[in-house]
Length: 189
Image (cartoon, rainbow, N blue to C red; front, side, top):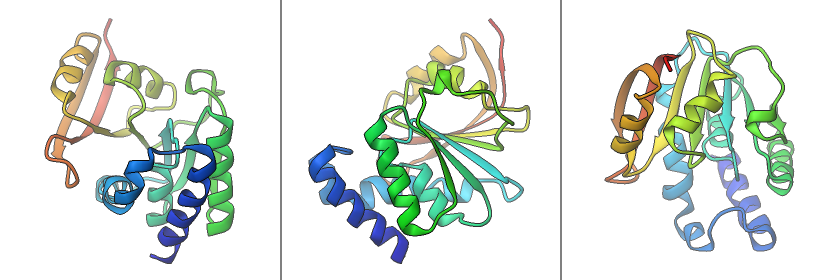
């Protein structure tokens, strides 16, 4: 809890200068950002050793998961915006976390060993997100994506090019939100 409180303090401080998240959302930071991110933790498989967060922004959900799963899972945060990547590095340093921050666009990040889990929140519509994620995945990879009220339309569009096993979990933070748990992803078009 102390690490999460320190994270929120740093977020508020940096946000005053760099607009990492909307000013209005800071009033509800615990529910809107931290709890929203934390609800993924129980869905991370016990055997998972690595996790990639795509389009990390201010660290949601990847940095929250790094705090909650510290020591159990190696986390890599992908963030293209330099200032946001600097913020992520500062937070991980101050909190004593071992997290890798990659300051590259997802589609230009170098190939690496596949991740066991890939997460994203407010990164891209599902078809594009799956395209990004496939470059970091293996057949066993589990994808955990926080999605909003357009989740049905995004799934319909994604299924035109992708075959996948999808389990939809209700969000605990938003009545129209959902968590997509995707497995066995393969491109078919």
